[in-house]
Every structure is written in structure tokens, then in C-alpha cells.
Image (cartoon, rainbow, N blue to C red; front, side, top):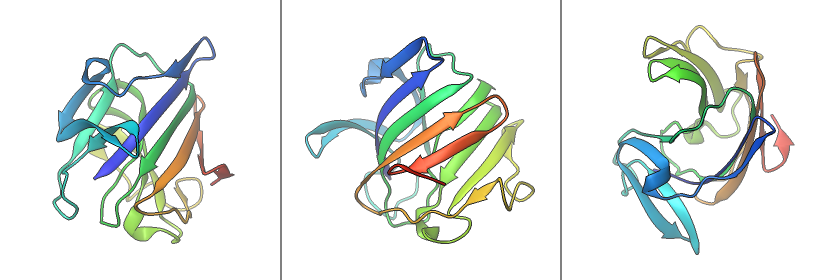
Length: 162
């Protein structure tokens, strides 16, 4: 289960926090809006560690092409993938950068893949420029920033560019 608190800054003219309440998000899968550590959070996935269930949350009414996505996330110590999808004109197409908590500290602990016709191609998009090594904390909050450009993105964790 990934738990996140999210701030999105899109296209210099649109910046601000997106409230973590159901009326601001389109969701699919097991998603809950809860309070943890005295803050509003969105839980993506099953509430019980070890029970796998996918979930996706999309900001309602936001058109995002380039800009900054920032959020706080708490990743569990399980085989799971969590991260932002962007450049997404529809549910079947986009770009996905995801954290692999079970691989923390390894060269491919953060990966990129395009999504085409609903399928990912992570097997093809490997190596420098498509994977990054990050050592990130498990079961505690970490700050993620993704600077999204027209043809690339830069991921930072707790202020460290990866």
C-alpha cells in the first residue's frame, strides 16, 4: 500500500495543493482517503501489507503537460510499484516513473516506461536514462519531486536528484 500526500504545480500559471478528498480525484481500484500522522492522505492499494491490489488516482479536471509534481509518499517494504503517470492524453497512453521499494539501493530501484495501448514496455526501456538508483526509506514519509519537461523528466527524492 502506498500512502501519499500530494502537491501539484502545473504549467507555471496553475500551482497549488490538490486536496486529498474524494471530490478532487477520479479513482480506480482500492483507494481510501484517511488521516495518518495528523495529515490527510490518500491510500492507494490494500490496507493490509502483503495483500496486493492495484489502484490509480487522477486529479479531476487537470490538464498537465509540463511542470512539477511534488508529493510525500510512504512506501511499504513489499514488492509494489508506485509513482506518477504523466503525458497521459487518455487512460491507455502515458509515461510512468515508478519506485520499486523492494529494490531500494539497487541500480533499477526507480524505473521509467511509456504506456502504449495500455501496456508498459519497461523491458525495452532499461539502462541509463530509463532507470535510476535510489535508496529510499520504507514505511516513513519521503518527499518526491518530478520535474516534467516535454521530452524528459527529473526525479528527486528528499531533495536529491536521481
